[in-house]
Length: 493
Image 1 (spheres, rainbow, N blue to C red):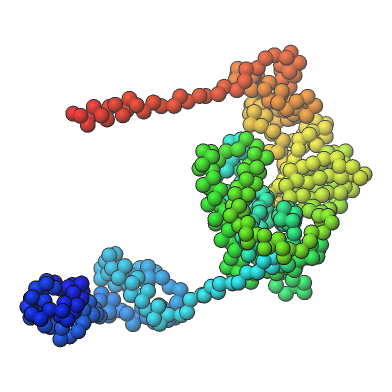
Image 2 (image 1 turned 90 degrees about the horizontal axis):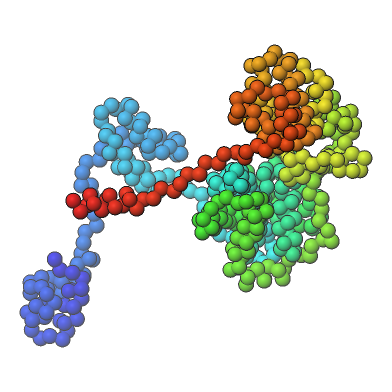
């Protein structure tokens, strides 16, 4: 087979050699073939006929009109759906191996006759002009705090020109999380961009048809920093493309950093926060030149931050509970019937009464949940033990699994009323003395198969009896060298 390289050599030699036979021999072809290429003046690749015919019969030729009608009527149909439908309507006619043939043909049809696809238009970014922010879920990375799963979000802030970024840990897409993360980013940045874009966050953007585009609290936040707010259109995440892309790259960087670290477990929350601070610093290290241009165009920060918490005044109900953001929390029974101020922060609630902070409660995530602290209600329950068995929030009154085991054991030994009295006295001791001490005493009684009672628990605590710590099981690492030796012996045999 003659190659392009041989013919090029022939064209070059024909002008320098007088004997055509020698010229053809030097080009590596016979004289007749050489004369053909000289006459045509083209390379072999230029003489190839384009393959436009089918080498085998099209199995979908008879039904293609039906397929085309479906595609024109419902452009979103996938080839697999159509193929499954054909197999149902024509049993035994189409084999599974013909699916790829149909997929190729439909792909060609859509490229030639199908509807136009969505186009993404590259944008020109200007220094100090626009910043974007959004929340991203970190659960899939499997991060743990002291061995316990740490489900959380990251509020992610990005400058679109330099891609400088910052982030804060949060637990919901609440306004408090948005305000806290947004202000942290601006004060870390040291300036304010002219515009801030989010997607259609319910905590920032009003529903369609509302006279005001943004919620009152979010607009106040924007006004405080003299920044213009804007939002993406519904179901158009590409309009917030910079921060969406940074979500992916940031989580990839976290994943790689955890692999280098050798563990995704952190001793406490502060250690994890420090890990994120260092990671953001590394990510921003390569953006210094463009970041300098951003800093020159940023507006000045205001004199102070705006409050990131929401103030609510509510009355404590007769059950010693309050309802905040569709969640139920208990407060101390001393406050029943009193009006209190609740300051709703990103991750906790502050209870204020008489201009004094009297309690701090972890904030619940989600809706229709409850957090009842047994210390708040135990005094009343001890006086009304009959209310315990059917108490709506009874499950919240078992601080550990051993308290639950103790109550179940008491129910087997006594009537419900006696079991409730005994358990509530045990719980009262946990509130007055020490939950840990009571839990250890219950563990000692359970492990020794002794009968549980409030008096026995009290005796163990007052006696100062040493209770052995919880047994820890150490699993010795398996030595695989012996297995390797076995394999080597087998291989040698």
